[in-house]
Length: 262
Image (cartoon, rainbow, N blue to C red; front, side):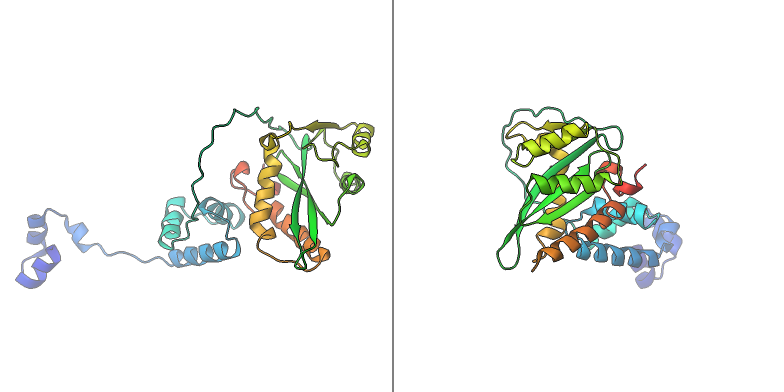
């Protein structure tokens, strides 16, 4: 209104500002476009197109800790919202459940490893399984083993290969699947001085770290791609595991990838 008064009625800027109760600084202010905003927008679009399951937290952590940009989170979030990149999350119906037992949080590396299986199928309908192994301390992914059948012998072989270059854990946490309660697996753990901690049946929250890791695998790549052969699954899993440990931000590590966490 002050600008219209100056333009139409030829009054002075000082008089117009006094009449409408604004400062001359406000009247003369011109917004400054920043080239950084364009760069932020481009990088956010690239991140969300490549990782459609990432929300603002992972995107900002990636830009801050992996790409080492020093942009303020409010600025990045404003551009994130203007681009309408927000994830649409369907609200869940709340169910009354008994309070789960507290999950013991490890305090050092190789204290607790968690194991679990996942299932999917190839393009020709053949079903395959994934054996996932993580270190609970920094949520570091250790092994993703793909196979049509993963009996206890295959599980033991995968763990033996892992122990060739990594210190053995004190505890292995797993469910009560036939592979994990078999005599071969129990005997192998006893020989290596490793304690097996089976969760209570029907309480997957007691193995929450690996369950959350499984969800990340499912939404990051397993449900996005249709593979023709088992070798394609194994190759993709190996490459993704490197990306997860070195580049993917993790909120449990204050926004840093597992191998970059202090």
